[in-house]
Length: 112
Length: 112
Image (cartoon, rainbow over all chains, first blue to last red; front, side):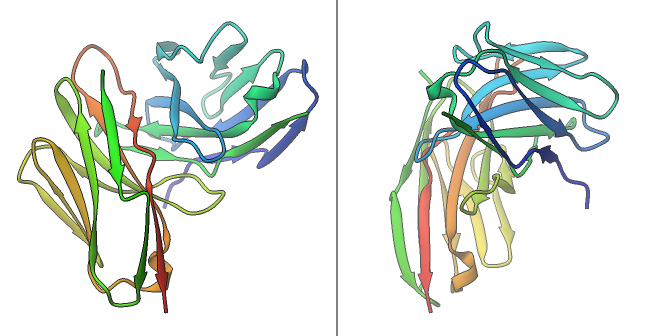
């Protein structure tokens, strides 16, 4: 059964450093998303991506965040200068025409 | 403002003791309501999509129903392996948005 994969599973970084979180969406899906979940809080939308451009972004997704689909399979989230409050689980998701979003296992980002 | 509220926050059941989880929503035009299961440290696992009031879907011991204001996830004769956090999310009509708006979840513990 096709699934969304994410790497790394856990990333530890120092405040101010850049991190890149990677995702491989389900192969025939066209819509890609990043969500995050701070420990003990709800899952929050960050950004959606379709046809090689951002289709929607939340207030959280400020200038320090960027997304890219560098090739036909990968989808990345870059945080340019990490802050302590960026510590969270980051989930990638993808969907086809049905609108049902399938999530990856997540990357736990810890900013020290 | 779009809002999703889940209750109870936590629920403890004995194995075989049936119950229901509630998801009430306020959204400007519902395009779909989604139920996910989330195990600790993992990504949300898709369970059901409901699109219109009166719709019902079933999967093993789970049954999801939808009205114009809320959705219920009924769990019949639960087993310990059903222990998880159950998340509800809505997708609203309007524009190009595919943003899921999540509730805070119900933490279900099923004791043998």
